Amino acid sequence: MNREPRPGRLVASYTQRGTWRLATIDTRAGILADVATDLQPRDWLTATSTHAAFIGASPSQADSVTRLDLQTGRCEIVRAASTISLDAGYLSQPVAIEFGTAHGRSAHAFYYAPRHPECTAPAGERPPLIAISHGGPTTATSSTLDLRIQFWTTRGFAVVDVNYGGSSGYGREYRERLNGQWGIVDVDDVVHAATYLVAGGRADAHRLIIRGGSAGGYTTLAALTFKAGVFNAGASYYGICDLEALARDTHKFESRYLDTLVGPYPERRDVYHARSPIHAIDRLACALILFQGLEDRIVPPNQAEMMAAAVRDKGLPVAYVTFEGEQHGFRRAETIIRSLEAELFFYATVFGFEPADSLEP
Image (cartoon, rainbow, N blue to C red; front, side):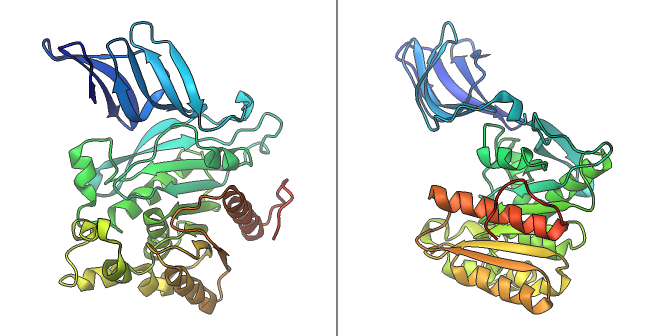
């Protein structure tokens, strides 16, 4: 929120059911009025009496520094994060969905159908589905353009990007669902998102995949172990398999974060142990690929190494892909490309299809 030089009016951004909006607020009359724009304000909002400046994006436009005329709604892109020109025929548009989950509650997600102007699935065939568990875990995913999602939808996959209970943007009660319940509520909601789409004919029950990074990697590994049998493959990007190790070694900025999400440590060491996927490896029953930056100090490589070794000992398909110089969250373009292509190759091997891409094994 940013106060303009003109008294009595504010320019603000707010979120409603996972979608961000730009508005003005007349503080004297107590009236909020939406500003007509297709762009969602993502960050760094500031304003003058006539214009607002912010990072804006949409389902078809990457993050951009944007200058908006508050009277006309006209937007000027000052600098875009990407200069790639996209053919709208390849873009899968997000559809906000709400679905039932555990304990009679509902949860939220964005669904992306497969989309390619030159390729269609055989009649009657349901697409494989990738369920994404976002990091954070109390942040949220958005419906703005993410080329990593479009990578999958242009290759025949449906995607559901889940804002499980605990995610921001759906009210305080929704946000507080994760208090003391990390590894339970998030897992339930991702599982129910996938089964909801299967029941609606929008996903193949025999080709369900879950993927996520960091905290989303933890949700991925927890779903594959504690809810074994739902997903047929998974991908963990620098994910957490041992919550106790994270509690002991986590960086200072989040040193008490886990007290809210899991419980105080070491007093509730039993909960940390019970919710760690590494201690439930006997339940895992599907293929897994793990990606890890070797310079990661937040979730060190030994977490992925433990998981890979445990899966290998079970005789299940497993791949462990590491990257020199990468930390927590991949930054280099070549790393991002290689990890996506390796993940696609892995799924092709697991599900027995021939990808159109020329991929390095």
